[in-house]
Image 1 (tube, rainbow over the protein chains, first blue to last red):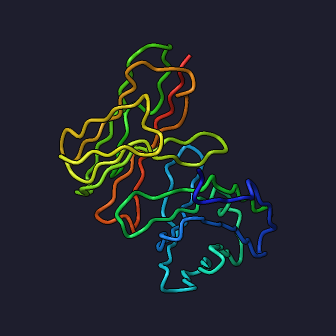
Image 2: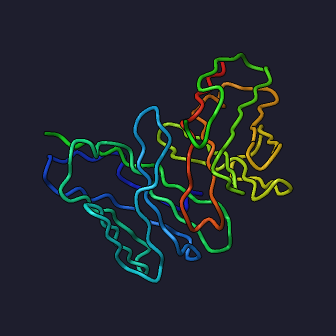
Amino acid sequence: DQQVKQNSPSLSVQEGRISILNCDYTNSMFDYFLWYKKYPAEGPTFLISISSIKDKNEDGRFTVFLNKSAKHLSLHIVPSQPGDSAVYFCAASAYSGYALNFGKGTSLLVTP
Amino acid sequence: DADVTQTPRNRITKTGKRIMLECSQTKGHDRMYWYRQDPGLGLQLIYYSFDVKDINKGEISDGYSVSRQAQAKFSLSLESAIPNQTALYFCATSPGPTTGELFFGEGSRLTVL
């Protein structure tokens, strides 16, 4: 049963515009959330995270927003660049020490 | 050199064969993981190990086994490979509680004919 859901398999955005990737979760025990980025033929790499005590975390062009009541988080990329084209995975964990649960990923294409 | 190294990077095998995927890390992390990626299914946890004496099943452990030979080494075995185990396999490490970052290897692509 998928506890972390990314319902959009793909997203296409023009260079310079905002990319918004969404993620929903079902397990109320999750309280730490991460986004990973994956290029073809490479392993996923960590992008940004947020704990449940915050509702926003920003790192340069990347911002993650968390809405605990809705069990929803989103990743905003502003401005989008062609090099951002990759698969983005949302992941979540609980402080129980279990491993990360990943969503299915969203493939982002940023066009010039 | 990569901090998390997986071998082989690509492997084609036949149904019924025993396959081992190896992972070694130079990050000094206690925690190691094996994930599987299938198209459209994201990353699914196979096994994880929080230290050399601690091995735990993940969500899709059937048909797989693991061995934690040392802090730096964590291998995944398919005792009798079947075609639906064709996938991209990732090893990952983390320094502590899983609230933090996982560091992934580059992946091992396995094809079972």
